[in-house]
Image (tube, rainbow over all chains, first blue to last red; front, side, top):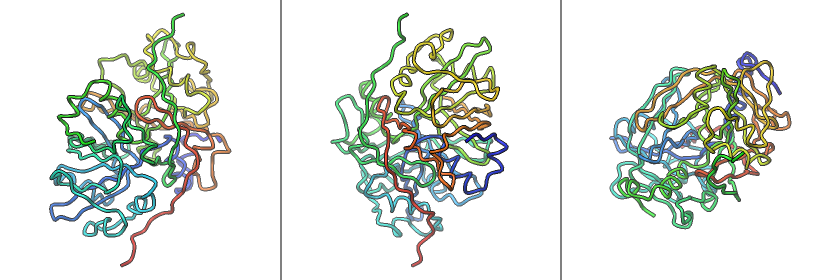
Length: 205
Length: 205
């Protein structure tokens, strides 16, 4: 299939969002959880969490245009804190259900089998049972003019990882946590088996 | 394992980059290719390509601090064009080798078995044999103050996808292309088998 930008713009809406959401490649599968000042918790699936740097440890994620409901954003701006929790095989359906648009006064934890857990006096809830869980402090945001989205950056201030995932050199074996990867809007994989490559240097002639 | 920000900051460098590069979850595996005005092509592996929107079709990726060699960035700024090509099982080792730091006068296509291909008069080269290939036009960039990285956004102006990957509703089945996903700095998976979920609506009480 070959499409130009014009062809893409003319596609049927649902076909287009399925197609274009697939072409960036595999995406991370995370639950971002927050709690409002009124003590209402919120949890939502995000496929846009991405590594920005290790030193300091910074992760980013992308939020939809300002015209739609964004409880995650409202809470983290109000409090400064949120958690990122890896989605795994055991919670795929509950995790995906958090994409339903609930009003802000309803907690998705009450509408699914996901359980909230509070650790080390952190303000935002973690999702019980996830092999990798992080407490983040909001750092900054960028309004993306190209399509009116928002990039939010946060620093990892607490990090919890199930011991059996961690290898000697710090590599976290995501397959041992049955961690999910997302394809498109709604395809969930549990990747198994990997090849680790070595550090690459230029080849001599 | 439980680490605070202070603990993370004190980790040994290599352990820290392996660990923190793993905790965002699975990452996309792409080759970004460019060609300078002097006609020297460049191709490099990126794990930070992420979907920003479908309408218009916008992808972003993250570049390292301005203090390091960035041939990809120099070329795309000079010409306005670049390609994104999905890494697949057949080219894992050659794709990973492009992480070696070659000087700008050397093309990684000459130092690996990756083959460049020019399609529809597009200025930048595509990587032959990739099931999903996109020609992008540079749109804008954001300097990320938190850690001196750069977010580059581009619009898909040409899109090539092997027909057998595309399902009736536009979903691109990445496993049919043996598309790779990245774990950490150097772990490559070829995910197989997935579950497609349905569109979620709030549950009635």
